[in-house]
Length: 116
Image (cartoon, rainbow, N blue to C red; front, side, top):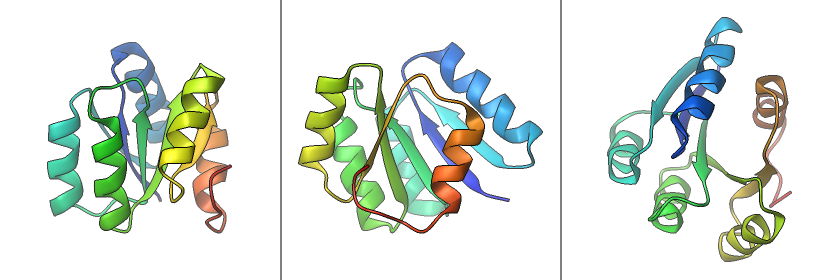
């Protein structure tokens, strides 16, 4: 079982992804708030923090994830925004929307690589 922190401004996206992950036996915690996510990262252990690159404060959250040793993945449907986020955060991976829950699990379940 993997533990995911899903931070996305689109409630429908994060809830649907969380449901799919939970149906596959994973823990999925969701929020649309960067500050709440940062606090959770400081007190709980997650295998992955998925961050919507559009959110105000996304850069700071990716930094918190890196400092806590949590695998960070920035996401966006816009390739230019996603590439810029990945360039600013070399320890984070990039994952273009849309994607399946199984794709996210496969990404996190393999050895860590630099930004993809």
